[in-house]
Image (cartoon, rainbow, N blue to C red; front, side):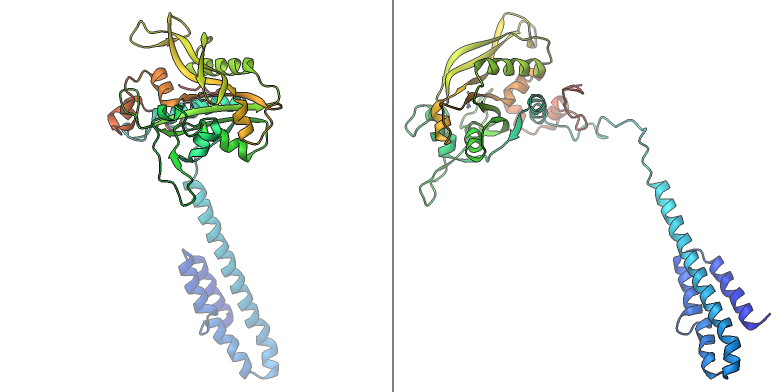
Length: 362
Ligand code: DAH
């Protein structure tokens, strides 16, 4: 066996024996590196006579090509094996049932306000409402004036507003006292028709068993050229049936007053409070759940629309109050005390999204 043959055998053996990329690289350097065995052989060609080079040249270059190819093959085999290993170890068994509870039962519960907000959004999204929002720190103009509550209007007193200092231009901000301000924002920014739902934080300087300085509201607004009070009643009825998960509800529309609606109504739903918890859809009691009405023509005009052409309804209610009613929580203040024991008792699983198809609560 010639020197070249035995060198080839030696290198091919080393390639076959190498167990990983690092070992293979060491073999490559020893053969094809600057001082490698094959490189050294190639260098000898220069000192050969032309005849000798004609014979040895193809032999040595052939060796170099076969070694290069064998190294590449082995490298590819390592890459394929590594990929195979990853595929096997990182495989996800999609037939495993979803874990419905967090591993630590005391942690990671969804707050009832978040749950109820998701439920309300799911119901209105199903009816074709779009989600809109606005800032907590709102212009006085949007929170009050454009909603037909001018500066000296008594309704401002009722809102127990947190006022900010006026800015350099004299414009004053407030912590929004209701989500109704988003009606204005939306109407100023978008073209009609509108069919929106808004949820978020609202603020009033008030604190007792059923009032906290920060609370949550949900607001609805529908405006086009033909929406009337009948649509409002139907929408609220469908909402209440879906939300309280009952087949039918009896509702009472009581005449009321809000500066931004005309006519205005407060809505009560029939319930039974004789037991320890409130039952909806039956009984002799009434519970007030929201305020609503036909959007006042002045509000429509304040947003640059023609009130002789556009009309529609709006409604607003307290999310926290809805949560208290649905899930039987007696004290609103506990909502915001961050007591883990309370959250563990009243909280919801993070992994179950409310939807009308899958069920709001399971
Ligand atoms: N903004 C009112 C409040 O905070 C609730 C309300 C009543 C909203 C009537 C409305 C409405 O959109 O039409 O008390």
